[in-house]
Length: 72
Image (cartoon, rainbow, N blue to C red; front, side, top):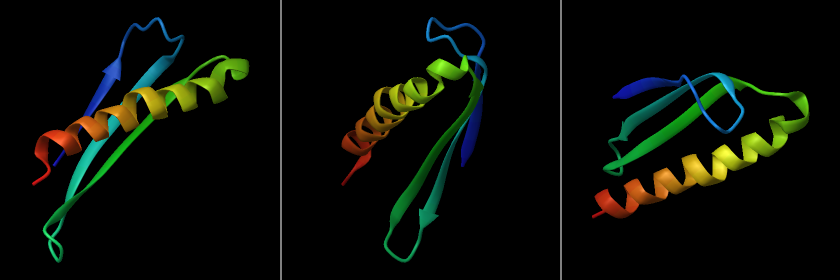
């Protein structure tokens, strides 16, 4: 299962933001592998900070919340 989304307007200072969220069953262990990626344009001097911010505050936090909600 997967979905893709775009952020059209954001106060983060990113443009052309498109992200993909993908879930893949790991049948041998009855787990699920989650992958969340994004591509975006940003001012070069802000790019590294935005990658860290989005990775930590959006992706890691979102995946942790999903794990807490759906873990057995």
